[in-house]
Image 1 (cartoon, rainbow, N blue to C red):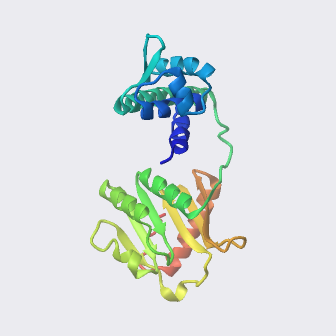
Image 2 (image 1 turned 180 degrees about the horizontal axis):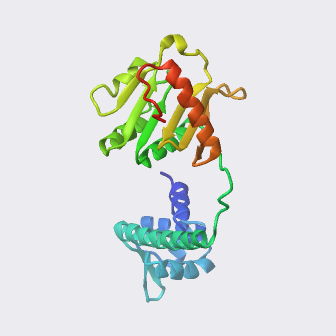
Image 3 (image 1 turned 60 degrees about the horizontal axis):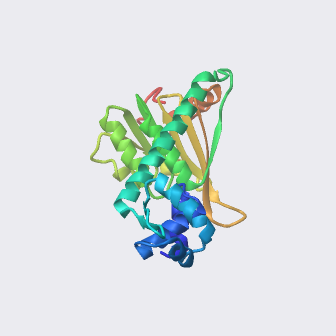
Length: 260
């Protein structure tokens, strides 16, 4: 890692450019005067004293009141602890304010929210989160792509805590992942499978949350992509879930009645 990389990393942690540069310079100097610091980095000598005061206030630099003044950085472990504590305090304050704002705001209960998620990683993250929030049931219909580990792990965890989990797929490799576990598997009839690169995956949680994805290649980049829509507790979700239930009842043997 270069000095510039270290400076940039410290800036992301909340230090100013001068503060970060001076702290990095002092790591190399050990102890230094204003002249030493100015020679070791791009902080003007006239700015060193003010920057040192700010670093001292942060608990990152000790100042020896000699002539000339000498500056010494605290240990890296101490610096790590102080920066972490400062970050945690700011995060707590920020989210405390957000909770207050949210508590004061009454959402329009008549709105029908349908959300879009773009990118395979983001879709997988959303599926994993929704499965993790399941209380009663989770139905996962997955196509022919390789099984996604995070979702598989979350499905197993949900089943182990008492959620009724069903995985439906025409892919034997995917179904085999759950052979010895508490998850019910249903093989989608191969003759019913549409060989369509845009066929994605479907998740239904607790009979009221729906995620439906389309899997294909981006026409602009040629890179495989996935886009999903999801909705919870809405009329839109209820209609799609019911249509999906009816469709699967006619296609899959052992599909439980009203399972969705």
